[in-house]
Image 1 (cartoon, helix red, strand yellow):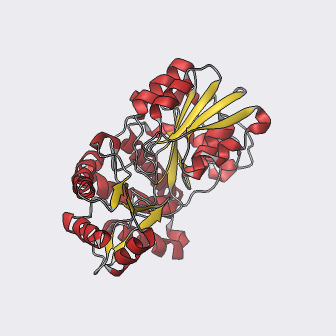
Image 2 (cartoon, one colour):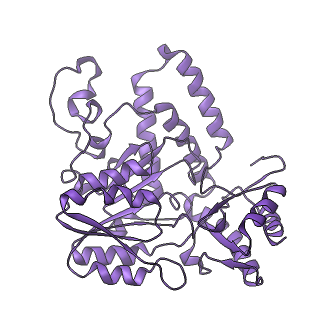
Image 3 (spheres, helix red, strand yellow):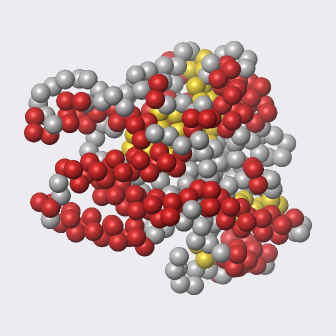
Length: 368
């Protein structure tokens, strides 16, 4: 990625478009200026190709994918659409707010959100979470696959097995892992997984998806209902032949006209990632860069590594806690390193386009 003299280590906030995605965006903008050239199949195909690419990234089928503008919409579908009996939803303390607020809002239905405190090392206490799942009152668990601040990777197989044993729904925020780490939602027993695509999937803002396990399509209540999710609306020439029969797959949760041009750009970005080896290759590349960060931090007494050192427990987010956060951020900025502070730590988020030289430049600045 050509960024001039800047080292971009902020994929956990916004991922840059690959060149082919930029070209596709220009193509769509030109079409949008002459809408007579845009056919309904052109739009429908862009959406369907996006569903197929998102499905491939997580081991799902395309008919289990509904296109969404961001992660929060998908998590709200889980909160408002799942048939939750009165009881408790568990999450980790320190979760991104999208895993908290939609579920805090369920109090009037007799559903309360309970946050499991951090372990002594300041990371999510997965063992305590699993212990609490089995106590009898837990109706659902919602966790991030990868924590946005610390980079801790949840063992989804372990948590999913506990949820199945307890009869609790398993809801996952996947935005900090999908695309750069392999995942098989079927094997893991995930009921709903939501993810925006603007970060690690290098796609436009306003693009994302929600995976809804196939046998839940008739169980999850669509909290918002619009024209686009109805079978009768598939014939654009006769939209007033009303019939409130929902589409038979996850498209029933897509209630409005989609941003077809943005999802067309997302398809190009996702294809570029797949051409580069997909999640497996990207995971290996990022893990190698992370090994250097971990080794560097182990040699310092003025910087603490918050992210787990174990490869199995980290993805692309690396959190380093310096003695003086403000001074460290100023040095990084002066060195042309683009990253952000999160929860008291410097967050480095390298992607497949980053090199070891990029990481060394960041570490040199961070160490002063």
